[in-house]
Length: 256
Length: 256
Image 1 (cartoon, rainbow over the protein chains, first blue to last red):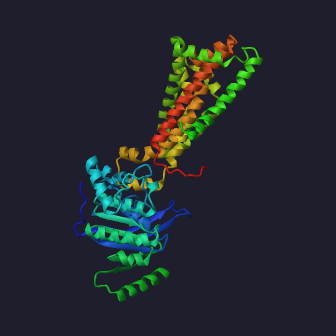
Image 2 (cartoon, rainbow over the protein chains, first blue to last red):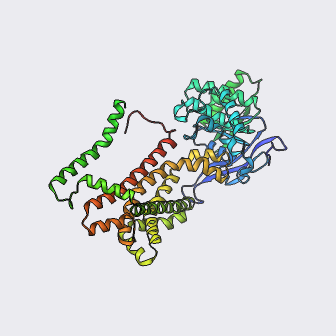
Image 3 (cartoon, rainbow over the protein chains, first blue to last red):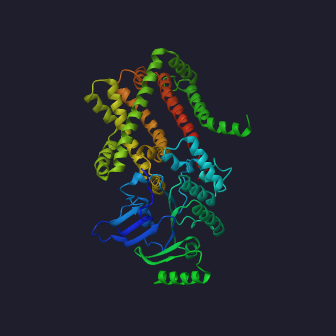
């Protein structure tokens, strides 16, 4: 079963999506996402920006098919990622905030994980995993266990793991927020290059305005609970002055 | 042999040498039915190991321990999986297992003698029922302690149930399972002796009863040493497995 982009070119669609946690009617119930409408077009790189606790990760988990919306529809390439969970095997890849490497697997075995789920033959798995490790500058560390790698190296392995399955859609949850600034800048630039080279559709969660401006073709700012407060497209013609104006607007929206 | 290895070996052997010397000293002052010479005990041990009928008693006990532990482990793992999947099952089974844990091993021996005629089934029942609660709770604890982040990461690749078990669940719970085996091995070896003492016509426990009736301390010690030796060998095997399987673990130079 294949999962192509929707016929209208929309890769990810959220229509009137709300997500509530806690028992219905209970005092502890809270709304993480509030009637959210969002379309991400195929090949688009969207930076999802918002304050901590605004429901970014909940949106992310719903798009990944790990959570179901309370109301509304979530579609990825025209299908429901929660109910058609298995249909998206190898089609959605995730880079998490922390590396989430399996400690009992070497770097290369961690990169092979997604390919194993797809039933790729061992030899082919090894070649693909090695290719991505080399691409991310991890030659010589293939057989190191995660505990022997630095934070930056571990995050590189997790990026290699996400790219290895050649998924059309990439979901990134603040993947560089736990790294020092220099490592994060270098890795961000490499990551951006790989996304563009490989024509991925990507949703990049961040709480840094600078990161959003650097990475996104489009920036979507969320208020709390998650609902679009500001949505802006950036392209090659966006000048520095424009970016400054956008930054100012985002700051105003976030502080409102 | 290097000096450090010698030192390590000496520190390992020294406590046993001290106990042996103290015993041998006592043997000089007390009659053999209280403190027999360790040389006599040594020869009696050798006699057990080379005499077919006696060795078969040792092997019966070993088989009973292993059969009981394997039975309890399989049933305990199945129960733990059910309890981890369903809160209702957990609420139903937890009090029952706690109740079982509170019943002394000797009571189970009495119940088994009243309920069952076959000796082997009787002992198997006692072994399973006395080690089942610990195995179940230990496997359940291991399942619940699995990192939610890692499980989510693996689930994001949409594994089949079998692959999820192989790449995530099994490696995550294996360290706790080996620890459970180590703990239950000691318990099982104590329980089997009691079960054989009261309800069997062969095995180390039965032979201990014979030695007691003849006031033969050397024989009692020799038979006891057979089970101690078995436990030590099994513990060494489990430790070897730990060293080999969990070499991915980071080691701190400073101990706790």
